[in-house]
Length: 315
Image 1 (cartoon, rainbow, N blue to C red):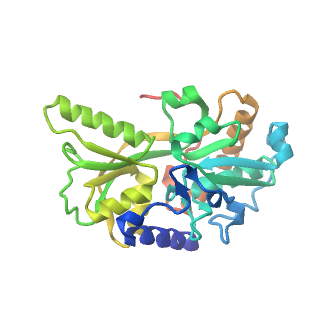
Image 2 (image 1 turned 90 degrees about the vertical axis):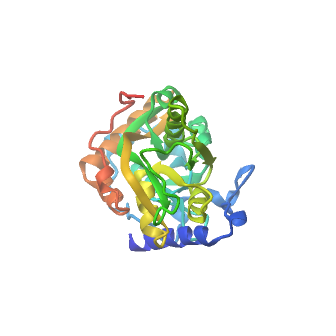
Image 3 (image 1 turned 180 degrees about the vertical axis):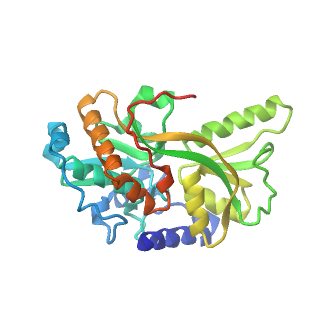
């Protein structure tokens, strides 16, 4: 865990130190991730959580579809720029984070050889389920819209929070964000919520929020530190982790809001794999493995105790 946090610190510190013109992730381009980003978690020099002691559960393994069994891997798609859930390690290629470890743990319970995680830009993951990916474990907040697109199995409960440059030099007020510039990751629940806040500002006769979506959270962090943006809005675990590892350059401001469950996404038409993943996740919950994995990243409090399929939403 200390090693993993050191890796993240290197990555975050490097991102903060780079000139703004050079802050793009080297494994991505306008055409998407390069092959270098498609390294599986099993190739990492170090891993954050040792899943070797997690047993295969035969009755769950029997549920896994034949094509997945034959392949021997559980293929996860994740936008690897959202520490501590998913981020690139110190080689700038290997996905790490608690979602990466959870996928590896699910694969163990399901009797598979390994769980691999490939980097993909966030909006592209759900459409690729059932072809490129078996699961999407990438901080997907469960919404009614996403439940129409995929099966979602709840595993953590995470809120949202604002992050600002330390000392809040822009005097950002989280209770009155009207007229400010806020960075968000493209396709996230925070982007949707920021748009709702902006609409309310306009309805109240105030200035709109300038919302700046990015594919990479590290790009947003760099711009907040550099003063281009007033704040960023992201998962509370992301803000807290970034704050603790940014060398004192980012801090959370205001309370955690909009707490909601996040889910493992599975192809909507794959009932067999959905059942296997749901039961494997419940096993990880019941036996303390999920909480242990999350605790490795200081996020134990986010663990749920029931792996619910397509839970009711309030959106």
